[in-house]
Length: 332
Image 1 (tube, helix red, strand yellow):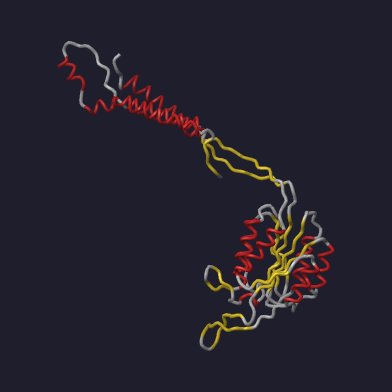
Image 2: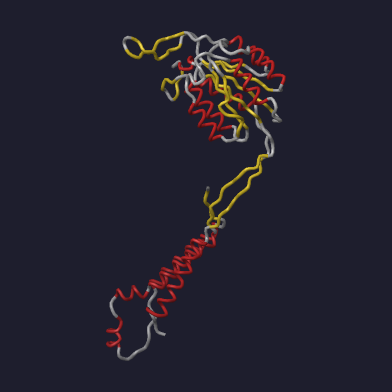
């Protein structure tokens, strides 16, 4: 919901109203001819009564200012969009296996798990794809659809934020993840169908091989991108030891050869992300390559607010008339 004045040019009249008020308040009062001025002075009263006599003038100025606000047409409004093109359908397959708790990524200078870094970058990617339908597949030892394709970005961001390590098991079923994501995309009529798989391990669970799953999605016209996460060599893991919780380096077995073959079979490309910056750049590359060609028609919905100013203006005007007619009567 946003606020605006439809005719802000009407505020140019405000200085005129304020100028009239200043002139009316400080001008010399009108006089009358009377021979016995001493008696008239006693009737004139104190300076405070003179100020009271100017209340109608102040009320008239307030009425004018409110009418200027009415003429400027204050409005609440919002904008809705009618998307008239299917755009791009995207399934994000994200690894939440145990190896994603490695602490070799940094976000804003702080060491975080690979999953936390992925969640931040994926959230930024979702926000950029305003008109595309996006779905989520989470995989570890199992693979399941966390969200079907949707344009509800708020829902997607909430689901990404809730992802936890091990929620689908500790091992890695890459083939199952590709198959589940492809199943969600295969029957859709979208202009472009994209599957992005992100993992830091090798396929050691599930009944479907990554190569067979990639071949299947290629037959359905789905382009497959793969992203390998993690640096070279052992990665630090937070583990409990006899001396308390410590960072212990362990080797994570990333199967780059398979991920490259899978991406090639799926008509896409393989990327390697060794840190948060590279991961962000990869999603930026995919965002630029897979452009959405949509036609968007905007609808503006307005709610007029002028009655909130018009009614007080009328009441103030009536109050001014009442004061001048019945209470603060003047001569003549």
